[in-house]
Length: 307
Image (cartoon, rainbow, N blue to C red):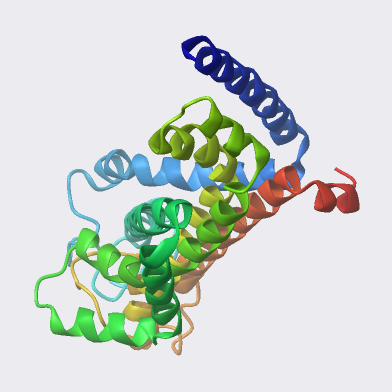
């Protein structure tokens, strides 16, 4: 029995090596995936280097610090995006906004996928009453007016930080990935290799983590990506109506500031171009990654696109 389990483990390792090599090869060939990963990597790099960039440009000042520069300067070498009506460097605020919006998005993605896996993976594999109850709860969350409830929660809570905002949004964003993961687990657990794993004496935890989880990894990645997009969209929507912590600079807050200050009406269009283009780049890059992954793991779509 022990030798059979060892042989099964070796076969799994060999079986996973080929798809990994194939995936790496496809990443190099897929223009969609390369462009998406490249854009997202550049934005993440900007966010990671934000403290160094603003330290170099502002000399230790915070990007939200008021009155350290002349008001409403047009774009120049010293201020590539100009300054706002409070004398703040717009480029510095944009870099901070990119960093914080990405943090919110990735926190929502991580929290959503963690909740989705916890609820769906084990329940769908075991089935029974618990699975039915959790599936019903997931369906209820899906039909709730989640954004309105999140807006009410954000308006009610006095002290907000990035983590708390992300958790409020993630408390509703997990339902979509959970439903998709559940359907895949239900399909996989009836496959012959799962029956074979049970015959050689593998425990349920081994089957879940070594047999099922690697096969639903593409759906987890895509679910994470959509949760990130949804998280950034939800946070931006909350900021556009004036909700959220005013001290946390995000792309949504930047758009809200410029829309409510009257600068756009006065013709200072360059102020809003930065945050709008940044949001578009985030969404385009994540969608390109999703399309590339779908073509990679969906053989039928792969044939249609000719990749």
